Image (cartoon, rainbow, N blue to C red; front, top):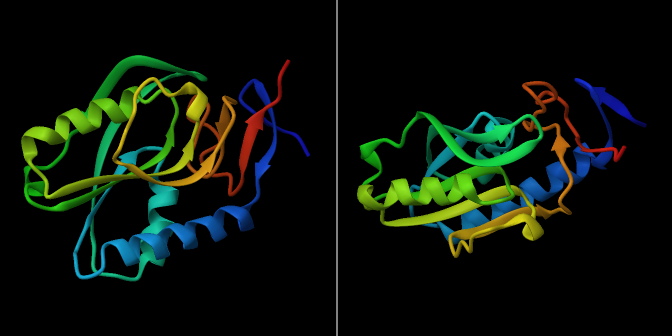
Length: 179
């Protein structure tokens, strides 16, 4: 079933049940890897909010949350220009940080965020991304340890991801239909 978001048509890619199952698997892996620690989950707004909420509800361990707000998208294209409107807290010094992202594609945003964390001196940094587009990556990230799904280089919406502000509320993930 195709849907319309803004002026684009999309088709189903990942159903709600598939997403929920993978979030539970990621939560179990994080729980095992951070046993005995109290990590800080840092959600990258706005796209990660649904994923982060489901992830921390499922992780079942002591943890904290914070948010940063950066963007590198213009319409349906990732750009190298990063806009920051909410920065990391200095309280992250010496803490175990898990950056939670909706999607890593070109890697510009993640590269920017990781560079911003260096002066804060956290104990450790890991990245947990719901989606990864390996063919679009322009950087290598050893911190990217937790990935929900690898995708082709298609534009996607739903489950927090948007097209010009629309579609974040969809419980499934859809990919754009080629014209």
